[in-house]
Image: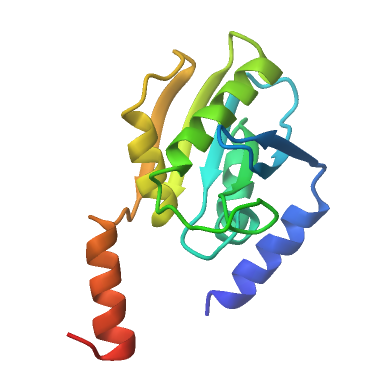
Length: 167
């Protein structure tokens, strides 16, 4: 039912003008994002995907909403996902510092008057919640956490139980 809608949204997003952007993490990894401008808007949403996904996969349907509502859009591939470097998935622990670096990138790119929204789903939701606990620039105005997990332990326990039938 949803597959045709998602497929159409991904095709639409691929047709939009965007720019591949890169930053370097605090520990030397090259991190990837794709920036979609929305005119001269001062509003930017930075989106963080879920476990084993990529920014363009998880946000293809929401991208249209954000762009049509006047937001610049930055879809990032979290460390060890997509085009970003990294060996280990940090479930938000290391990614929170990467998210802060993406915020600083947007402030530098868009200027001191920009307004930033952080949006994450699943593992990305945990990332944005952990990021919210850091000292952030005043340009960060809101955080959307969609389906964050309670802890990495709970995730591993559920996967081991449900997928591998281990206690």
